Image 1 (cartoon, one colour):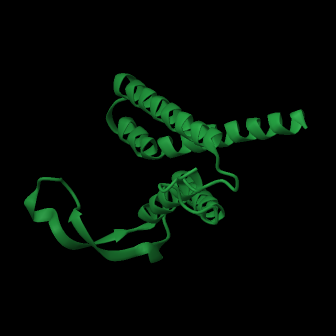
Image 2 (cartoon, helix red, strand yellow; image 1 turned 90 degrees about the vertical axis):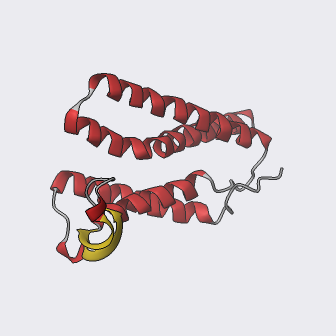
Length: 158
């Protein structure tokens, strides 16, 4: 089966390692509420305050990049873990992958609709930050759960 859009299987472990590290650091940032000061760096910012406020666009600012590093680890790790080929990639695994992706998008937008209707002010902003990652997280959970179910069924038949 031709799957040009998937990464090689060798990236799967790297993806899980980056994703796990990102999640652990994310929980650290969430519960400690303090980021290490050595992450305070000068960075280029397209916008640093208001999106349409001209004095804060396209300039160098000082920022703690810990949260950005966590987000990059989660996104890159999650994409590598989710979209790397399995050792034995076949049509049924491709079907599970597609169904899991559709399911993850449905659940993600269900969470978004719930948040739009019932969560307000700064709490809504916090939900939106988590919502950036939920498609990947929901996909990884369902896809791997379905793969485990498939492997159990296969072992039971033997």
